[in-house]
Length: 215
Image (tube, rainbow, N blue to C red):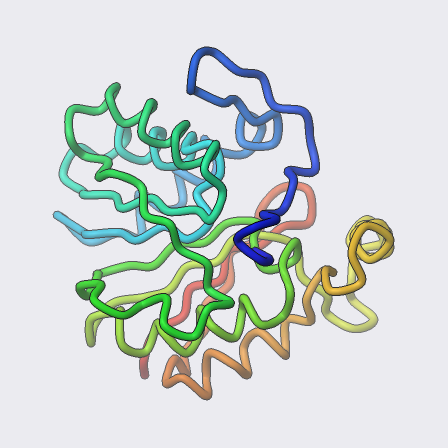
């Protein structure tokens, strides 16, 4: 999530069918993520997804949970068009995509509150300011008993998987502002925003789901 005039390019080749984009990485992980999210989301949950990409995670979740409402977003116009195209497959559960860039100070102004904010694979391919902006705004956007759910790779000091260390080097070679984030740093910025409880779910390929809640 960089300057809106130059949004980030996906780190993969995406197939296209009309406006619908297909992500190889989403195809690999969207079902296992949906399995975990389905157990976390309360009945009738309203979900704001940050950096929704192609929209395939939103589509999968709406198909898995017909009771939820999903608000996708992305700073990239082609991604938003893809999300809106996929939305036609789930009969109104996916709302029209929003142009959201969490590096912008006022990005959350005029948005309603949500039960859940979900963000997958964004904070490592964006400046650190994107994670900071997400944490700060979540304090206002998430309902008192709600949660923030992040998915992706993280560094954990000496316990960091070698694949995540290699990925970190690769990301920094593309953009020095990117990189696999330290788990302790991510927990700190959300704790500072009032989310003092962090539950972790180990996922395939050295990824994790982090669930932040107010304690």
